[in-house]
Image 1 (spheres, rainbow, N blue to C red):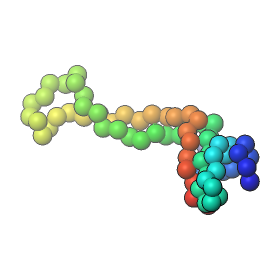
Image 2 (tube, helix red, strand yellow; image 1 turned 90 degrees about the horizontal axis):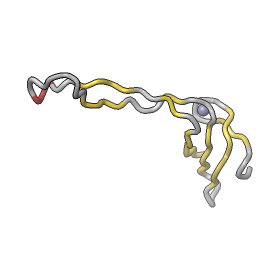
Image 3 (spheres, rainbow, N blue to C red; image 1 turned 180 degrees about the vertical axis):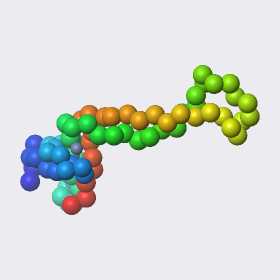
Image 4 (spheres, protein in one colour; image 1 turned 135 degrees about the vertical axis):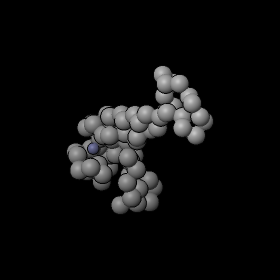
Length: 73
Ligand SMILES: [Zn+2]
């Protein structure tokens, strides 16, 4: 196994090894497929704030390409 080899990303896509730890127990792979990013709650400033505890928030999802994953072997 070496940098540049193909490896499965955590979602099963064909990804490429970009880094291998010296003990070869952890590799970093970069996947060219889209992955759903973290859902982030962000303050929605388009709505008036009535009370601090009821501050309106919206969830924002992002798809990310070329994500790099660290994988323990
Ligand atoms: Zn993937």
